[in-house]
Image (cartoon, rainbow, N blue to C red; front, side):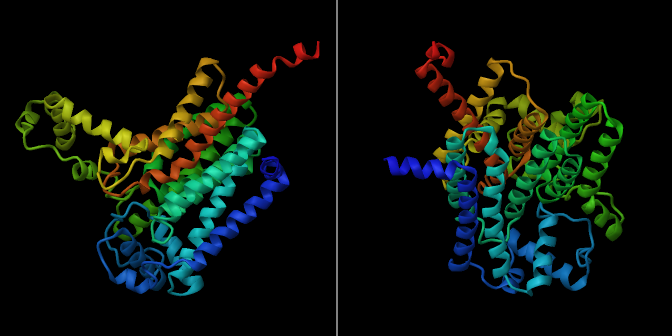
Length: 424
């Protein structure tokens, strides 16, 4: 028992954490070189149809052979949701040739690096031992939820996890230590994250006023800083819009598939039992001229509220880890349920004590709520398995361990008594 305690103590130190980080990255590199892949040949992936990874592969070959604007796709970019991921694949093809193995190796490496980045981002926000337990828990999540299911496939979540880890590292360190170049780097990384997972755009919109308030409080050059942060965020997230305009003259900021309610219609169609004829007389449609599709769903909610809101309740519990709520093909993710319980415990502890949220923490909570709320409202989470939920889980997990750290430190204090009293 003492040996285990000593090992955890060493790992919890800064030098031990560095050694453990190198081990984790090396571990995922080793796994990437020794596992078998379901789709080992890149051109075979591109020739097949029916899955997102086939489409990404075809787009990557188009970029490599025909140019950066993806010219064979003559219309505005439609789907899959990630525009940037095809360019990540194309860059790999340019560097390593038309091979899938280097891509899979990079995805495994990015997963290991992401785990270590998130650890070093939050390490100083909890005690050493708790931070090491957090590191180990992230490793378990990475192995069971990402490595097992998504690292051996050409899917954008592999890139999204990596970019979001870098974003929060730069954002938190930049705003905690008031390092403006890191703040600008975080704006650029968030823009690239939006190009990888379009639903992050809602967080980008919310983040601008949060950052603006921070700069105004600092007072020094706040107008210039707000302007620069906003410009960099918009410019880095607008590459798809630029491509669409140059190819077909349309200024579509997001992929067409996710810029409409097509996902909602696909996953949650209006039942035939709903009287759609009432749409014409609905105030929203007759007077405000709101889209017929949107008003159809308003009628759905009015006529069958239990069915309508029951579906979204099931999506909520699905996102919280009870996957059988939407599909019997999935099992309960108890580790997700515990993680979310820890997250809400953290929020309750902070609100009860009326503690002020720093800029980085306000931004993180806004990210978690906007990211999952957008998936609950319109994301086809049941059709895509649980991979759409994965990019935000490390950050929810971080707060759950911060809650554990607060509870355990308070418990230790109550057990030992006040230090000053003991001294007397």
